[in-house]
Image 1 (cartoon, rainbow, N blue to C red):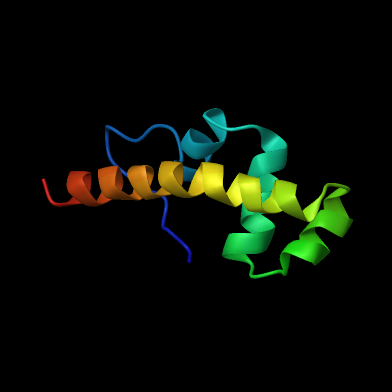
Image 2: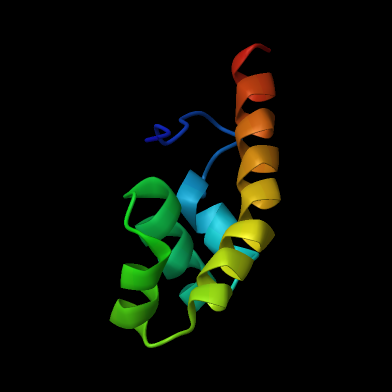
Length: 79
């Protein structure tokens, strides 16, 4: 799902950049391809030269971080 970039004084850094700053690039690539674009884990693994288990691990690691950032955005938007 696409999350629009927040605007306002408290959001100088785009949403995606905030998540990427807390995770490694390869994990972000795997998360984007598998979770956001819907590619099967096997295809993501083959494309990026990693194991399928590594794709699932990236999803497991980044899902809570993305959920946390989305919750922060939602809370900021209601203020």
